[in-house]
Picture 1 (cartoon, one colour):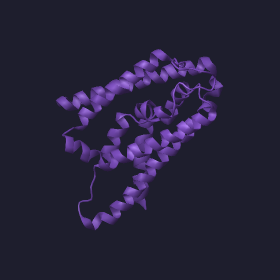
Picture 2: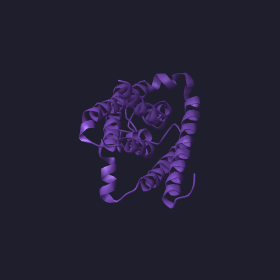
Picture 3: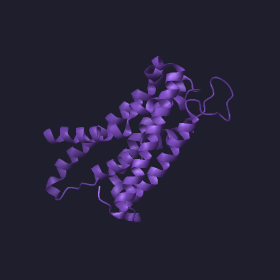
Picture 4: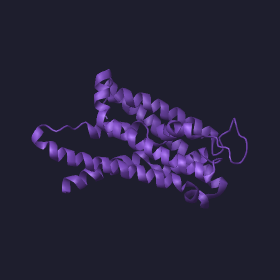
Length: 219
């Protein structure tokens, strides 16, 4: 039971600060500010489901996929860092009121259900950092068939940790308006820009770590 609890906590505690659903909440709210509550709830649910399966896929088959294509984790970090940096840069300039090219009224949204995966799930919620951690966590294999049962239990605990992350994402995004209601428009705009700047810094950090690991520089 100790190992199972540790596996659950390892996955949840390892991914939570990187996924950072609380910090992503004001950005999610700003991108869905023209959506009604029902549409935002649907998007929150879809993003949570997408995040769960994306992290689960990275944990289960991520290392095999990278090995099959001959891709290393540093290359994944470099590519992902570029994506996160570009996304953070755009959010930093757009602020809390991204322009809606097809705005038709107060119930029209600047994002729709087709945007649930990109950019709301990836890279806003599950970025390359979280994917790299999930691949690393899933890279441990049972050394012998005798340990297969124990490994299965640990795998179930790890999946439960991913489910807990997904539930946290849903709660934060579902109640995003309440979470930032006390900030007001100006406070939300400031928080969005600060979060976008942090996201930009995270992207550059991931990019740097990937470059450093690729060329073998010391930490």
